[in-house]
Length: 198
Image (cartoon, rainbow, N blue to C red; front, side, top):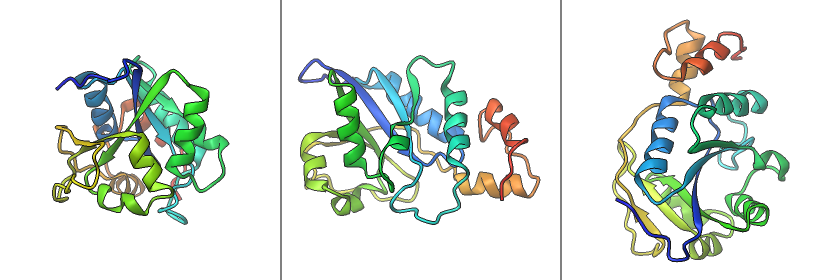
């Protein structure tokens, strides 16, 4: 389904994540939204520290960013975005959106979000302003019921591949010496072979 931008502005989707590591599920979703909606591009926003994952088992941030850059390097519709590396931590979505808006004033940003995250959105920092100012495209997540969109007038439920790939599963498989082939891009698999997963 193609959606028209009311303003005619260039629209860019933002897929936020720790990308710990980036895997094929992230890339399939990003490609889907970049090629099957009104979005000109999708940027994968690497979060050095998610406020809901403080103390989580995060791989080094520079490695996570590099792997996203490698994964999307050959795709002109996808991009690794590192702006949260310049912002106070933990990373709050509204602060990132404000910073991106200042840096790219001609761009209209759209949040891409799994259906499992939408119910908790009202608890995000400055959620009222975020919900009033930005369109949000929600994609289905395995095991997550379809949310009630009535409280969210700028949220649209979108068709997208139903993927259940976990970065935790990938890290644990790698640490056990098990194959992660096809779960991550080949270039990332090669880099992981030289990385230390504590």
